[in-house]
Amino acid sequence: MTVVKTLGQFIIEKQTDFPYAKGELSRLLRDIGIAAKIVNREINKAGLVDILGEAGNINVQGESQKKLDVYANEQFISALSVGGECALVASEENEEVVLLNKAVSKNAKYVVAIDPLDGSSNIDVNVAVGTTFSIYRRKSKEGPATVEDILQKGTEQVAAGYIVYGSSTMLVYTTGKGVNGFTLDPSIGEFCLSHPNITIPETGHIYSINEGNYVHFPDGVKRYIKYCQVEDEATARPYTSRYIGSMVADLHRNLIKGGIYIYPTTASAPKGKLRLVYECNPLAFIIEQAGGRATNGYERILDIEVTEIHQRESIFIGSTKMVLLAEDFMAEYSPKEILKVV
Ligand code: AHM
Image (cartoon, rainbow, N blue to C red; front, top):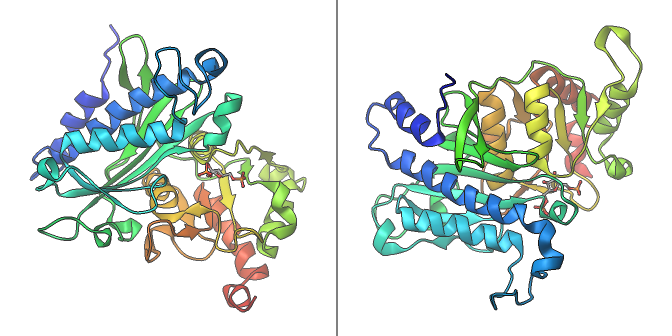
């Protein structure tokens, strides 16, 4: 008989990894899992938009349709609010941090950063999208939580994860003791452990970058891309180029198969496009826990000072050997001092 372990069972089992745990973090993770299932249900209906009505329209039940990223934001915030373990949320969808239901969360120890629906433009064309989240212990001990509570380096993350809504829906998370992946079984409505102890291959044959921006890339990145494209039997080059344009999906594939994902600085995004707090940091934590590496080409993502919630950063993330080599190209052709002067 096949033994199925659900996300809920797994979280409770793993609570013993933390001898003084009172179950708060477990409940928080469970709340995120619940919201993910609701969001997944709605994403699966996205193709029916012509039948059910576009976002902004009134649907057949007389309810107004919401854009999915707004819907996802509301679902995650409401699950965290009702759960009561989270004091404050920083979301891609909200300019300012959101203080949660004070009555429920007044003793809450945690704060959460989230991108509720990353790569949302892909929804219209039935391509995978994702959610990323980071959990921190709040810094203040009393009173209402403030933005300062979440302005913490990635190294301070207590847990982080992502959900990829793809050909199947998966939730992958870490609490700093390895990485585990759960696939949603729609027939029972549960995330089931499908990928225990995920490790990323030390090297791979996939590079993921939006090459349309090539002309604007730093020289180090241009040279690294050319390196990936050169024929060389010993290193199995040329590598394969794969870019979905949905960071979670690109990262998830590279995590399983081995590869590198790069979103460097460009002319239109001089500090990089992706957001440090709710995109780069959670994914960097996961990839490091899986044995990979995540930097901005020079320094470790998790060590970067956080000064504002929507801060942008460039990222080189994936299989350790590939990221290290890309960093060598950066050091040689785009040394940090030169970039600063430009
Ligand atoms: P979004 O928050 O507007 O969805 O942007 C984030 C996404 C990432 O998921 C993806 O990797 C990247 O932006 C793609 O950007 P580009 O279209 O510039 O390649």
